[in-house]
Image 1 (cartoon, rainbow over the protein chains, first blue to last red):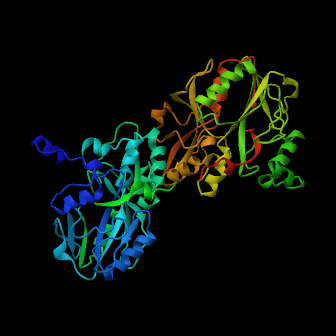
Image 2: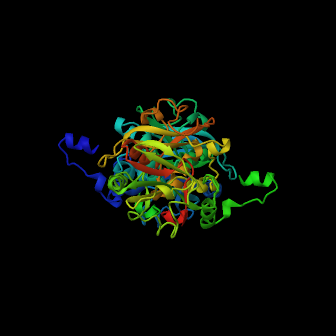
Image 3: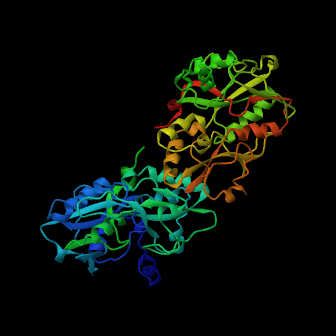
Length: 273
Length: 273
C-alpha cells in the first residue's frame, strides 16, 4: 500500500525501519496492512483473546505445547493494555485486522474490537516466525513465498499436541522450502529463538509428518518449491488458534491471518546466545 | 575385541570409560582396534603426516577449508611429540594402525611408524565427527551404520574446495541417515562443535550435491537408510587426506581408516556455548 501511495504521488512510507509504536498508531488510525516487511527486527506476534473460563485451558495448553505456542504475554482478565512486550499497547485497537469467532464460527472481521470487549476477556500474545524471518533473509536464505508474493503454506500434521482441558488436536506447521545447502543455517538461526518456535520440528520426508501432498496445504498458498529445495517445517501459533476454535468457545478473537501484532520488543531480545 | 576377550574367559575391558592415555598405552603395546566406542566424550582425530615441503600447502589448504579440515594441532618439523591436544603423545606409536603412501600409492599399513620418521616430517591432528557422535547418541539420535556394525558411508561431492598450492579437489562428506523429526536436533548438536566439522553442509536432495546414487558411496559401506530418514551430510577430514594423496607427495602417513587418534581433550572443550 505504501507502493500504491507512491504510485499515486503520495509519500513513500518506510515501514521497514519505522518503530512499532508508530506503526501501531497508524493501525489505530485506520491503516489495514499485514506485518510483512514492517518494523524489521522487531517481534511479530499472534493474538488470541478468550473468556476467562477458556483462558485457563488455553494457558495450560500453551504451557504443555511450547513449540507452537510461545506465549510472550497474558493480560489480566478485562485489562486490554499490554505491559511487557509493548507497554501501553491496546489489544483492542492496535492490530490492523481481527477475526471474531462466536461458538467456533467466524462472525466478524473488524479493524478494532472495542465493541466486543468484556471484563472477562484475557489476551494472549504469542511470538511468531516472522520474528526471525529478517534473520533468514540476512543470511541469504530465500523465503520462497515472499518471492512469489503469496502466503506461507501451512499444514496440519499427524503429531498430537498434549491436551489441556477442552483443548486437544494436532500440531500445525508452517513450511519453508529451503535449498539443501542452507537448511543447516536455517536450523541454526531459528534455534536462537526458542521463544518463537525455535528449531524446525521436521525436515524432509513430509509423508512421515502425515502430509500426503505438499501441493495442498491446509492454510495459505500452494508452495513455491524450487529444484534442490528441501521442505522444512516449523510449529506455528495457528496450532493454538485452530485447536481453541475447534473447542467452540462462546467468543474468541484472534488476529486476522497475517495481520499480526507488532511488539516493541526487538527480536534479538528473544534470542539465545 | 574386548568382547572376544570375555568370550575367551579373559578380562572385560571397559574402553568406553577408559582415559585416552591408557588406551594409547594399549595401542603402543600392540592393541589394534578402531576408535569407535572408546573413551566416550573425548576428541577423536584424524592424522596426516607430510614432509615440510608439502606441509605448507597442507596447512594453507586446511586454513582455507575449515569445515572439512579442523586442525587441532600441528607439530614442529621432526618433532613427533604432541603438546596441545594430548601432551606427550607420540604420533609415531600412539595410533592403532597407520597407512603409508609413497608417491600417492599405498606402500604399507604398519602399527607404528618409527622406521618412517624423518626430521622433515610435520604431523597434523584434525578433529573428526566421532568427537560428537556420543552427543548424538545421548540425544536419542540413531547412528544407522553403528546399528548395522558397518562403516560410515562417505561421498565425494560437487563442491570444489578452495585450492592451496598443489592441493585442489572436491569436498568429501560423511553421511548419516537421520529421522526427519531429529534432523534439526542433529544440526544443533553438531553446530556446537565448529572445530569438528560443525553443522552439516547439506541436508536432503543428494543429487544437488553431485551424488547420483546414495547406494554407491565412494568410501565406507552402503548406507542403512530407514523409512522416514533424511540423508544429512557433514564435511569430513577424508577431504584433506584424499586431496593430499592425489597431489602425490613423496611420503605421506595417515591413520588407517577408522583407526583414529584419541586425544586427551574432552569433546566439550571444543564446544561452543
